[in-house]
Length: 299
Image (cartoon, rainbow, N blue to C red; front, side):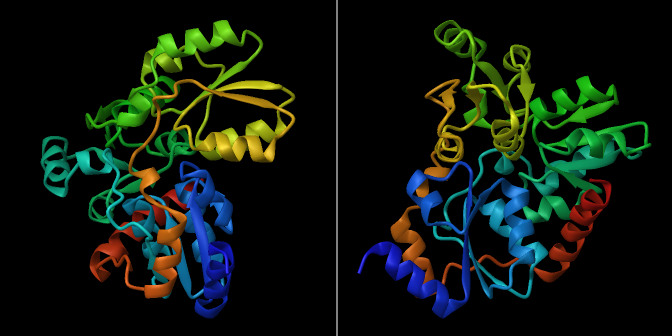
């Protein structure tokens, strides 16, 4: 029996659904029931009739799924897959910044731990960050933890933003010279980059989109060639869904090692053993969910 057949049998037995992030390895995406960005995965988990969620991504994504659907069992095939940017901010660090800016509202990027979300006023994603910030009437906004997304939001809103100086190491590897080199090789291609990139890279883009936004744009656009400035794992999905179009990585260096820790074998073992559950303490879950719910109300 093949790995796929064994996984399918166990999915039925466990009443499970497999959700994979856009940056996951191609073979993991191919065994998933749904592939999407971090918020889409959590929303799909919450809407699903499954009792068990197999979340193929990094730790904060599994936590977010557990926050939104506490009645389900959320399993991570690789529990050690963390997010470096999420780890750049702590509850203690956030509370210290809040004490310095007591009148500021805290906008928390979804790429954070549940404990940090619980100390925030409202969450955001890369796709709705501008809308979330625009909805806040307070004079100051603490934006955590991504300084580059904070800068991008500032350029779109003009709001007074106090950034936390975190960043995504993978997106930081995508430099302007990489974009210029690919533009020289593919002069007809549009440049689509993620707002976690640095401002100099964003300045060279035709479009700045979340991973979900990139996938939608690729389907709907008449453009035949695109240079994609985000983690290279998304190229598998883009090519699979749009075989008539060409997609080029802005940089081959933009690989998240944590996203690549999940394997198809680990998906199988997770279904077999059912012992890689991600749980969020009740009090933290309720406060974190309130911040997520506020975001959903806005967007």
